[in-house]
Length: 592
Image (cartoon, rainbow, N blue to C red; front, top):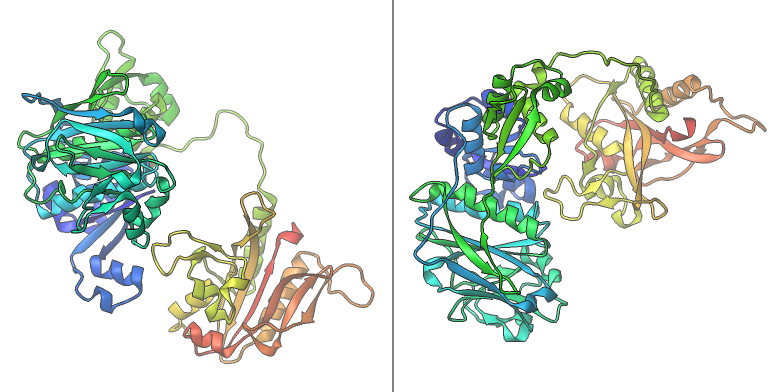
C-alpha cells in the first residue's frame, strides 16, 4: 500500500476548509483511506537517516502521510486526492475530460527495432499548463509513485515528460546499439553514450536499480525529435535538453512499455490529474502514435465505459436496504457518476471514468457503495446458514498461554515484527552474519531493516519506553519470529515463541524460572528426572547476550527449544536500561 505525503496547509487550502487532525482522520476513514502519520520533513529525515544534523535545514511544515489503496492510482498526488475528496463531500461533480484538437497533432513513430526490448509507446500533450513550485513537485512525485507502483519499478512502463517548446515533432521511438546513442543526461553537462551512461550511473542512489533492465541488451530504447535531439533513454533517464521547469507551458508526455495496457492506464492517470493546471481545465491534446505496421492509434484513450449493476444484488451483498436513487448518489460521491435506469428501476448505469481503472468488475462498484454508506453503519447480522469451523491449533494454544502468563503477573506487549540489524545483533553481542535473519531489500528507515529473529529486543525497547513506571516490570509476548530457512518453500519460516522479561532491582532469575515451570505445568509437561524419556529440563550453556554462568538452554525431550538466563550488563547498556533483567524465551510449536 503506497503512502503519499502532502503538506497540511496546502491540502486544506485546496479543500477549502481547515480540519483538526482528528476531523481529517475521520474524513479519510469515511472515504476508505487512513491517515498514517502527522509529521514534518525534518522529523522524516531524522527518522530515515538517523542524523539530526543532516535534517537541520529541513522544513518544519506539517505533512500528512496518507495510506492509499494500491489500485487507486488517481489518489497518488495532491490534485487527485483533493478532487476525489471534494466529489465525495458533494462540493463538486466528477470532472469530464475532453480532447482539444490542435492545428496539427504531434506524432510519435515506433520503429520495428523496438520489438527487441520495449515494443510499446503512447503519448499525449498538456497545453498551457501553469506550474507552481508545489504543483511541479507534485507532478514529479506522481511519476515516482507510479514508477514504484503500477510500473513495477519501470520494468513495465517508463514515463518521460518534456518541455514541448524546446523540441520539434514528429518524434521517433527507436532501439539502437548503446554506443550510437549520445546525449546530455538530465541535470548533467557532459555528453555520454549509452555505455558511458551505464558506468556513470552505476553508483547513483536512485537510478542504479533501473540499469539492469536494459544493460545487457544489444540495443537500448531511445526517443528522438525531428532534429535528432534525444528526449529520453527509457527506462533510465531523460535528456537535459527537454527537461521541464516552472516556466514550462506545454508538456509532452511519453510512456514506453512492455505492457501496453499498463502504459495506457499510466498515461490516462497523469493527463487526467494534471489537466486541471491547464488554462482550460480538464482538457488534453491527443497524439498520433504510428505503429510498426503503419497503422495510427490516437492516445490517450480517456475511455468512459458504462457498467450496469443490480440494486437488489448490491443491497444483498453489502447487507443494507437502500433505494436505487440513494445508491446512485453514493456512487456519484465515489467519483462514479451514476443514474437509475429509466426502463428498469432495479438497475444502475454506472459511468467508469478514465481515472478509475481500478473498477474492472461489478464487485468493485459494490465495494464503493459500501465505503460511501460507511462500514460502521452496516448492521451486524448472523449468517443465514450454519458454519462449522475450529480455531487453528497453534493460535488456540497461543490464546490459552496468554491467559495463563497474564494470570502469573506479567503484562502483555505487542511489538513490531521489523527491527534494525543492531537490535538483533550488535546490541545483543552477536554478529548479524551468524544469524538466520531475513533482510529487507530496500529499507526506508534504520528502524526497520530486518525481520526479528527474537522477541527480546521489542520487549527491552518497551521497558525503556516505560522506565518511569514502578518496579518490578514484568512483560511478555507470544508472537512469531521469522528465520531464514533454505529448506522452506519461500526461503524463510515463521516460528511462534513465548518471551518473558523480569526487570527489577535484582535480576530475579527465579521469577522467569517460575513462569517457565508454570507454563510447563499447564501444558502437562513434567520435569525430566532420572531415566525419564520425556519432559523438560535446563542445560547450562554460554551465550554472549547473557551473563556468564547465568544462562541455560531450555530442553524438551532432549531438544533445545529456547533459552533462559540473566542478561549481560552490556546488553542492558545498549538498550539504555539501568536495572538488571532476567529472560526466558522458547518456541511453543512442539507443544501443539
